[in-house]
Amino acid sequence: MVACLGGRCSWVATSVVAVFAVLRGSLRCPVHPSPSDTSLVVGTNGWEQKLRDNLAEYGYAHVVELLNRSDLQPMRQLAESFCYGDPRRALQLSYGGYSVPGFLNVSQFAGAQWLVHDARLHTALRAVFNGSRYRFASHNDVGCDFVGVWHKDVLRGAAAAHQRCDVWSPDTDGERHEIVKVMFYLQDHVHDEEALKVIPGSHVERRTPWDWGYVALHPRVGDAVIFDQRLSHAGNTYYNPFGDGRLFMQVGFGRINRFTDEFERGTVQRQESLRARLLQSITPKGPMTVFADIKFTALGTIMSALPPQLLNHFADKEVKTHLGRSCS
Image (tube, rainbow, N blue to C red; front, side):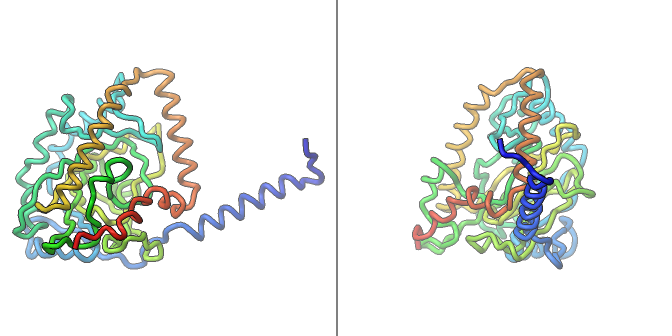
């Protein structure tokens, strides 16, 4: 055992913690100095063009009151029951929180299938794709206190083999990757930063441009956040076992071309693999769920303390594999 004389060990420990805190603070993504207002209301003057302009320039748009609050209350009840009922049925994630991959094919969510067919959603999507043919890309999941780090939504792991064309380059026909994710939060986030965080304009960059600064979005129940999948974005690294539950549903749509076909094949493979694990993750309430809450809280604390660039290095390692895979 090493002796500590005159408080030397405590001084060293304090110094290490201080240096680490300064280092992390210097490496964290700064707040965007002057974010543009990307919110819009369907039906107001010029809303369609503003929606397209926001997606083209910033990579995201906040559609206010696309759905009614009353539409999503039953959806929240479904998610709460599945994720936090007795038993807990959602898939435990290795980095914290729960997910219901491919929820539209889970029998308990039969009452949520209307979402992908909703006329109001497709009014917005028709504006997004501006006359081009588009379709549901099979991407759909539910997040329950989902812990997420900075990343871009490209296919990962075994599913990445399906994405043969670089998603930042056109193909031989001039077609491009045009896939958007539509997120619905099932609680208000007006007074917190626990919803989506984005780096405006980063969808056109392979890298995550930390120096540009991030914007925290503040959607209410019924709002839709629509964003380009290549946008650098993050959820929340904070897991709160005592909160009311931070729940969302998301669905993906893409222009009809080879990029959407490739993404869908990988997505279906990933979701089917995760659903197989989902069936094995049923946990009765008790010691195991308490242990899961403790574990996720600890993971969230550690991930919040680490420099985001470090976590992003692993989260976006597949982005580098797109170099040299242009199909043009």
